[in-house]
Image (cartoon, rainbow, N blue to C red; front, side):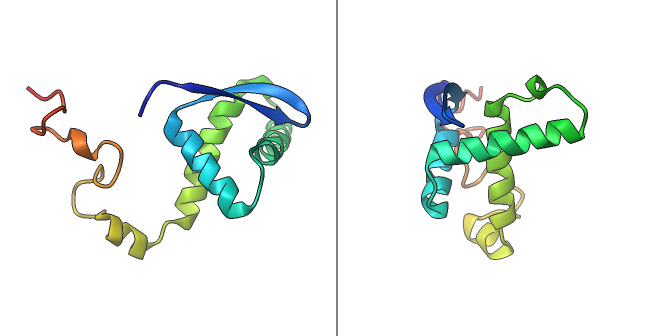
Length: 116
């Protein structure tokens, strides 16, 4: 968690400022490393696909920002990679969905959680 961080990425050769939370930038860096892509390539492909979806849906291209599209992409990427074994290793499915997430240390009753 943290404040939004801006990076300039090149989308189809055009410098574009994108603001995301640090955890999303980390996820994008991991995905690009895993897929052997430059971040600019990923954002260009994302923009092309976003524009195609927008045209099919008969909406204006400005309805979804590239930052929001990146967030949706990241969640979709990791959802497709999630397996039952991976969830079990992370301790999921035991009634504490925030376990193994950035919010795990802020559980009610734990120091620093803001709980009263």
